[in-house]
Amino acid sequence: MGLKRSASGQRPNPQPAARIARGGRDFNRAMAALFCGGFSTFSLLYCAQPALPTFAREFNLTPAASSLALSATTGVLAFALLFAGTASDVIGRKRVMVISLAASSAIMLLAALARDWGQLLALRALTGLALSGLPAVAMAYLAEEMATSAVGLAMGLYIAGNTVRTLGGVFYAQGGWNGVAGLVGLLTVAGLVVALMLARVPPPKWMTQR
Image (cartoon, rainbow, N blue to C red; front, side, top):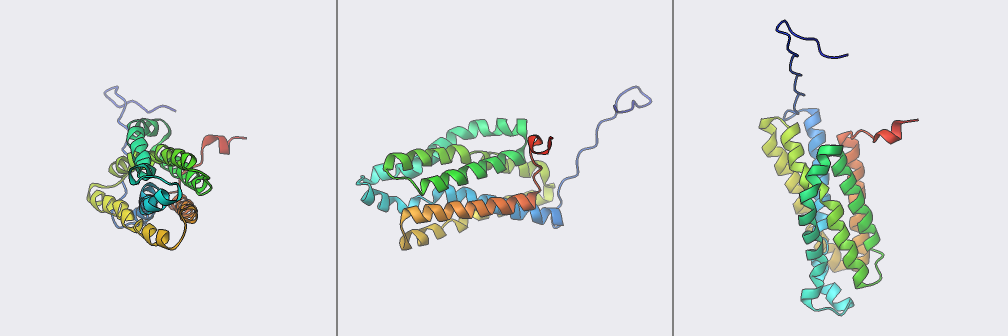
């Protein structure tokens, strides 16, 4: 049923959706989900950094060549950011973030099984491509969904997930890069599950159709 016309013959403007206020239950759930997203983003992106000397030694590479494990991811990510925002306008910001995190986590698990430098480098580049949806959309999501008084704190909590990824250096010092890559992949899968539970992302239509 369409909107009724007012006395002047014009359709009334639809009421804007209420934004998430600071301190409420919805705010806390959204912040916990975005913290998981921030942790996962920076873990997937920079977990290779402490392993660069290991890559150089195991694959007989120069230091400059081993750094491609990081620069391939960040380079592809920077390019893909140009298109991720457009995709979110079509299918929704939450879904883009979920798809991005799920795909990049799966690729990270595959990277743990890489047998040579070429496979590892290709998977690291694909990680940047898959991961681009989350950082490209997260800030726009916060600006659209959060009340003005809550935006600053929300952005700070999202970025705070960056600090946790420094634990990767400790793990790399204790074990091989394959095991650590698998561990990071599993942690980001866990982060995805928690984020889904907290953010209450609606399932795609094909899952609800019979």
